[in-house]
Length: 374
Ligand SMILES: *[C@@H]1O[C@H](CO)[C@@H](O)[C@H](O)[C@H]1NC(C)=O
Ligand SMILES: *[C@@H]1O[C@H](CO)[C@@H](O)[C@H](O)[C@H]1NC(C)=O
View (cartoon, rainbow, N blue to C red):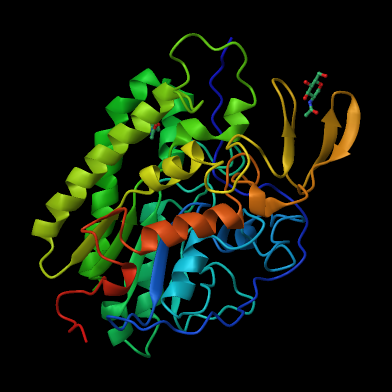
């Protein structure tokens, strides 16, 4: 029978081995507008070291492909937000919570693995929920801004990127069941809007908002499904009912973003259909040069046993260390929940050019109205 298993987007516990490096980004591209900084909010999809600094950093093999060591990212290398920073000609974002070698010259990252929009009745010690929910991340930004005396104009010209919501949906699945989860969506979306309004109140004008990905397509969930009832999986093999909830969340999120455009004078809000970008990659994995989407690069999972990426454990009675696959560039899923650098790069290329955006502009053209486009 099929079972519903939902995993949080968070970092697995591991060994502390290093700090994120701020390598020089690729040469600055020609830019339509001058975006001096990125302020990012979200969960492990875009956490560049926040939850790792606050709790347990992930150990090897995370980070191995690009950084050559663990750097607090739930991947073998760069995340989408890293590719966004490169595209804007900015250095990789330091986590606000990281007090070691942090560099906030070109923005800061408030995202933490396991973060939700709403505060939920769980904790880091129960299902890996981050205590730094979106409202707290916004509060941290307020403090960051109030205590930063230089370059105040950068806050108005900066781009505010947000990628959060999947953990709220996962929480609802766990506590309410998949069917009943839809009822919680309006409240989650309203709280999201409150955070946007608060950032606007602090001077934020350009928002780049990712909708939530296809939570029904997590390989770690797929690994546990045997003999599913008819209709339980869609034609790709994803859990259809879970994706229905994600799609409903996205529909309400988009309506709210459109509403915010008229409420927040002078703000530019770009809604990015991350769901479709990720689903397109998953459904066309082979054509895009990847193995079957459900392949997990790092970690062992079957119906009742799990050895998460970077951990030691028993599978089929054998002691194993969950290390990396041979060629992560051919695999979409890094650890069954998060994406590999290769997949993140594919997604970043496809979303930053505007082809999944409303309005359909490149991230290089996401200028607040009051800033002239050269
Ligand atoms: C958390 O628990 C309180 C008290 O039972 C309840 O009112 C609230 O709705 C719960 N929050 C969530 C997100 O489940
Ligand atoms: C465990 O053994 C079963 C049965 O031989 C096999 O199908 C499964 O792939 C094994 N699991 C792992 C993670 O190797």
